[in-house]
Image 1 (cartoon, rainbow, N blue to C red):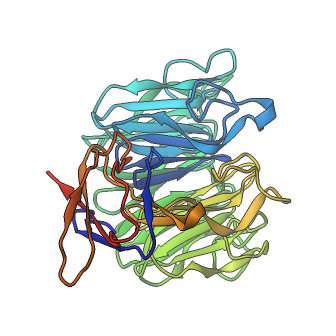
Image 2 (tube, rainbow, N blue to C red; image 1 turned 180 degrees about the vertical axis):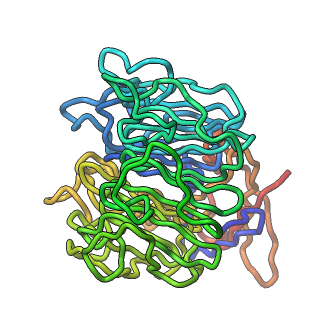
Length: 463
């Protein structure tokens, strides 16, 4: 239920025992999948992470431990509030509500833009501020980073050995990179995507531009030649972009899906395993969102259905098999609102449902799905599994003696009232004693219901 200000009536046919809820209950609003790790945001602006942490990409102050595969297999809180945007790849970036840019993880090529090439380990395990304000969008590649400022200018930092940054150079030895943000385009940039040694961006006129590595035709310019300066690929009507290791997807304003680049696992979804250096149409309409992993692709349709194609050797597509496919196949029929694809060394996928539930599938060898395991026999799962439960749902669990435990998730720091009635015809709602929800939305009901009469209950928000 999206609007918790509506009354919620609960018909309990047995005695009910209300207990404190689990803290940390807020709807998930944004997801990002990196190289064997995952990040997500909750509605209170908190940043959470799970998975591989060898280079400090989770930003939790550790580099994992050998005993836990240098990782964590449960979501952990990284930043408590004010985070608005996240991006994950070979390292992590996030924005705060004041427009400041922060980063953590691998920094061997200056991809964090902090003026260093990492510390002793070539990385940092705590979030550090890179830019103080005015950043509006971010993108993370394997070894480089991009961001947009409020004036529409495009900036980049990190590895540039293939012309990834589009600054007219191929970097300077020995790092072939830059460790400070540099301006690439002065204005009119509206969207960005960073792949493995290449970059895509969209301008305000809907034109698509690209630079960097092009060995598999991922730039879509009709060649396999790399370029160290932005080149225009399409003149108009492009609305969204996604960049992987060596393949690219984009959407047009008519809802059509297009692809170019490497296709050895069928990740382009064109029915072949042949790469192409020019954009080709995969779906003609109704596509609303796109995401890519190392060698697989995901997209959403306007009906909320989730589709995928490409590599599936780790169950990345969640279709119940481990077989690749070179045609789009439907994975979830409805209710999906956001998607993310991760990669290197293997792929995994995340998706968010409209009820705030977080789901994942694919490689889990480093705990990147956050389900408390390190995968099954194969270190992965080939079907979607729920990582965090849906938001604002009432759930019950039968306890010993026939009693029931009732759980409810609310909005952080909001006030709720619990009422009970012996009948609905007529109703006679009697307020019960409750407490305000805590900072993580936890509710504590302090009145024990009478099992003989109190069979009808409602939870409502109050001023």
